[in-house]
Image 1 (cartoon, rainbow, N blue to C red):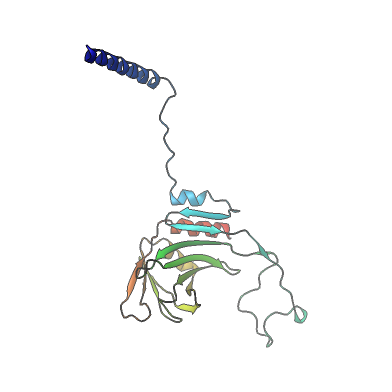
Image 2: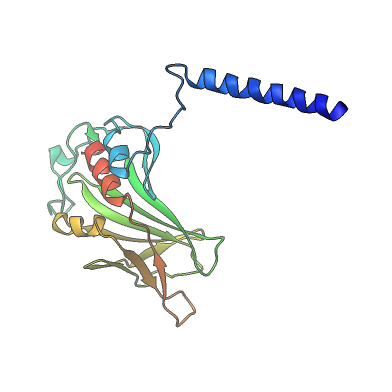
Length: 225
């Protein structure tokens, strides 16, 4: 008798649950919430405004922009003459009044394959009045020394990245990129940093993700133009 009573109660509960689900499931406008599709790297970069300040992930890369600031008019000496004491003209033109200093960089951090607790950081940023694209590579000083050669192998080209100097905290390699050479660099599908660590005869390669690099550099140009 008790089992029959329990079975009857369960049956009533089940019927009530099915009725409630059918009733509320059929109500108009009651649809499951679907999250919006993730933006592509190109869409993420395109939505950044010219006054963007902060850090934004664009594919595997990050675009980091600080607050804008201008370079005040340079003080003129010698009656307004430019150049050095021998009268040699400067190699590059002086910045115009209220020149906006480039303030963005496209950057990515990589783990050192030999020492995972160390980071190798690669960045692209614009330099100078002519806004020349340059590549900066920051490495632990235990891995390279001043003057060591490094190579960035891309789809159809290679870039030399000589180490320009070292401190106790890091070593810096850099190379400027001509305007004609920029498209094949930033649009490469594969990238590999190749170098021989100090005190070793074995050459190692560090794979660099390229997803998002092209739109990140395009946003950098647009914001820092």
